[in-house]
Amino acid sequence: MSIRILLSSSLRKYVPHYDPLAGVQRTIEHPISVKDLCEELKIPAEAVKIAMINGKRVGMDHHVEEGDRVALFPPVGGG
Image (cartoon, rainbow, N blue to C red; front, side, top):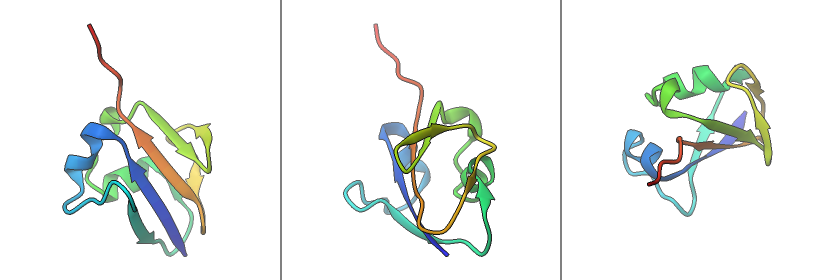
């Protein structure tokens, strides 16, 4: 099962050779939670503020399935 993962700004540093235009194509053997996916990618769960699957906001316990497009965003800071 194949999924596409898109990372925003500061999350990109956790995935070596991340291509911001293409994202990361990943094969999963079975549905996996967003939290477990972050763990596999070595992205600390606390670094992710918003998770979206196929354009809809989901929780970290939501399961990713074949063909899904996952987008992860860090907290936004400003001043």
